[in-house]
View: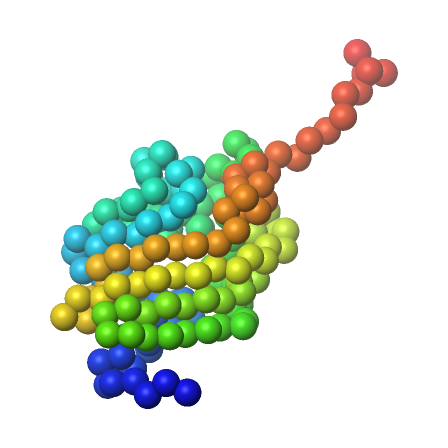
Length: 160
């Protein structure tokens, strides 16, 4: 079992709060103003096409996107963070970095069960603020499940 410094313990706790803290926990307060969250799907966030979400405002939009049901009619689903649980959590710290891997289970905004494994590499600055996150997961699965989510219906030739 690793022996962590007080600073590393604080950073481990901060990362746990980011994912599993109560709803009233101010997640944006743990980020540096110029922080970047890299997310491998360029369809997530605002503007579309970006994978690096730079600054608090962009990170807030990225995190809020998981609660946005306005895109369901365009085949874009998201998971409901109020209906999310984590298991198989692995958490490691080394100086300025924390790595967290977990299995996430959620209900989507359309009511489907979603499960995927995520791994985050998180860098902190000397003020214990997050400066960079890289988010890794099965992007093919997430893309097909969340972003290519069309309710297909066969043709109805007898209705013509």
